[in-house]
Structure formats: C-alpha cells, structure tokens
Image (cartoon, rainbow, N blue to C red; front, side, top):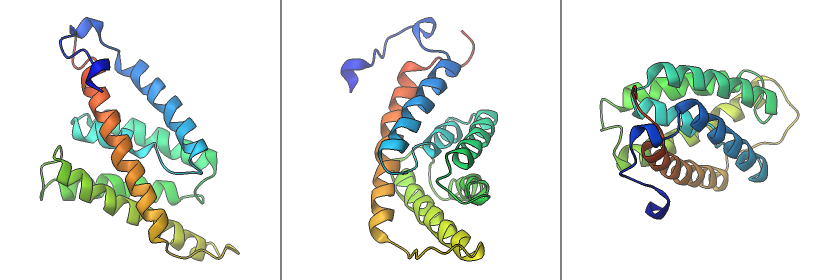
Length: 167
C-alpha cells in the first residue's frame, strides 16, 4: 500500500477532508451494497474519534444514522442506538487502552460487532417482527473482519492522503 502513499507530500498536495469523506462514503456504500449489508460506514466515525476530531465524528455519526435508516438494513431506531454505543464504548475503552493501538481496534471492533448484532436481534424481538433471527457467530466474525480490514486501510489512507489542520 505504501506504493500509493507519498509520505513526503506537502499538506497543500493532500486532499481536503470534505473531498476525502465524499470518496470514503461513496466507496463504503458500494462495499455495503455488494457485501450483503455488512457495515462499512462505522469506521469513518472511529477514524475521527481516533484522530480526536470530535465534531467531525459527531457529524459523520449523524450522517451514518441517516444513511443506515435510509438504506433500510437496520430496523428503525437501531442505528441511533448503535452509534450512541459507538461513542459511549469508545470513551470508556480509551481509559483502558491507547485508542490508536491495534489491540484497541481489535477488541473494540469485536465489541462493536457483537453490540450491533445484539441490538439488531433485540430490535427484531422488541418490534415483534415475524423473522426467525438467531445469534450467529459466523455473521459476527465476517463483520468483525470487515471492520478490521476496512478500518486499517481507511485509517492509513486518511493519515497519508488527507490534509490535517490549516494549510
């Protein structure tokens, strides 16, 4: 991947964050569509949280909630509950581990995946939907792998290609 990243690029040669996030969401929505509904949007919020861009994380989380609700892959209200958990769990977990460490992301993404699957199951039961849904470790492991790989690629590209600060 380093062949595509110019580590010595001047800040003026890097992408603006606005352009980066448009491209990110375009690719993430396509990935979500062609992966049978796996979540590729949440790592955007995690990248902002790990970069200490709190307002960016809040706006992206709001955008993700609207996108999840609009794409219809989660029951109404589940995505709101999920993103509240993303923020809450991040701020609790960063007391225990360094947020930029691979161990943090490994454990945090596993927790988020189980959290997502659990609240979807709870939402199906609570909303009395006529679906036979059970907890699936297969689904959890695939979504977990998607989070880890997508976060790793996106975080490194974000750090290398996006202009940070004023330039």
